[in-house]
Length: 269
Image 1: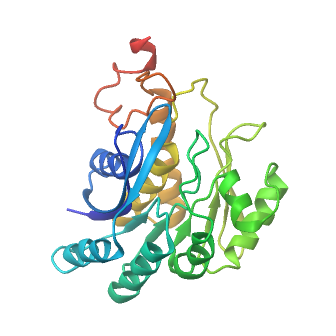
Image 2 (image 1 turned 30 degrees about the vertical axis):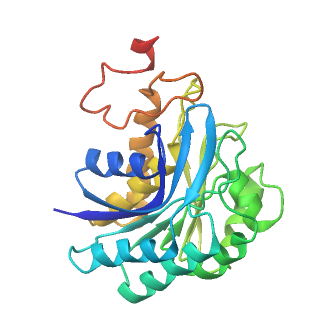
């Protein structure tokens, strides 16, 4: 059975982070493993607090997995401090996984800073060069590049700038574009557009985590990167279309909609 490891924070409401990643791996037929880097107190309305685990225990979790079970792909999500980033980078350089999908999670929808300002440089210097693909949204692309990213030409410029920081490829996600959800992929040679359908819903908690972990799952299953991204896009499109109206804020996507399509936002409403 194909396997994937997620290295990320825990979401107590189950819609994002480690929980979303493991649900995605399971939904796509991949055995999921995890290394938790921080525990968040959060729900559909926002993040209340974050408590980081020590770099030592983060490293030991990663070691425990790699020393026992083959890892088909690694997905990295929220990592809030430079100590954790450097530990993760050290372990990835040691074990040399075939694929690394880096989702540079920086700010939660409610505005809570998930990446400490001083850790931005560590993420750029230590993790980006290890990534097979990195998947910033528009806001994260702005944080990484230092310029506004609101239009397609700005997304292309951001993709080029982020590519120059060391990853093998960049997928700038345009879910909040005025023209509709268009993602821009750049591999250092050419651009490719991935288009989606706009879904009228507020229940999009965990979409970024889910997309990046789906890419990792499909890479672990042997798909070429371009196909892995397209299949992941197809999966997240369905998960949003069947999103769940849970909680009082932004509800989660429905990771298992292919098995339980009758459970959805429409039904819950």
